[in-house]
Every structure is written in C-alpha cells, then in structure tokens.
Image 1 (tube, helix red, strand yellow):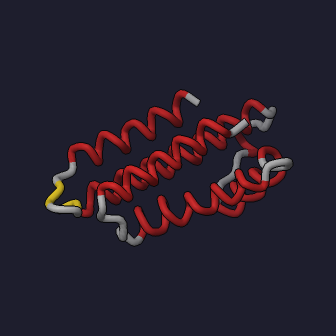
Image 2 (cartoon, helix red, strand yellow):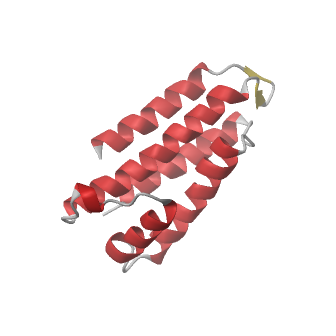
Length: 124
C-alpha cells in the first residue's frame, strides 16, 4: 500500500497549496489535478492487492471495466460494499473531481480524500 498512499499524500499536498476564498477553491486546475492523483491512488491500491493475489503485471486491468471485473473477481467476492465504495470513488474522484471539475468546496474535497484513504486501507 505504500505507493497508493504516496499518491494520496501528493493529492492532499496539491489541495493544501491551492488558494481558497470563502468556501471555494479559487483555481480549479490544481483541484482537478489533486482528484486525478487521488483516483490513481485508488487504482494503485487495487493493483497492489492484485499483485498480492498472484496476478502478474501483464494481466493487470487496463480500463475501468477491467478494474471493476478484477475487483469483483478477486477482492470483493465476500464484500459487496468494497465494490460499491469503488463505484462511489470513481464518480466522485474521476468524474466529478477530475473530469468535470465540479468539486470546489474544500470540506467536500477533504471528505472525499478521507473516503479514498479508508477504501485503500480496507482493500484485502
């Protein structure tokens, strides 16, 4: 989990350096960058767990569909909540935060990053 937590720490550092005015970040570009980095942290955590399960690098997922399938098959077999949490993080980190740049509130951003950390730490 070291690499995934390093990514997540980088995301937090990016947000910490981003100016805030009132209840909103003033520059959306670094916020989007932070969410992209946090999303990569989640993917790295899944890859690290798959490596522990014996999946070789060439068989690692290469798309969101691949990550979903691997998560269901190897990591969320007895824990459907893990898969639902991944779907939520995909929507919040990748779609709303990175792709669409919709997350502007610092408290919301911090909450989403806490959720990402919790997800990373509970991956078997």
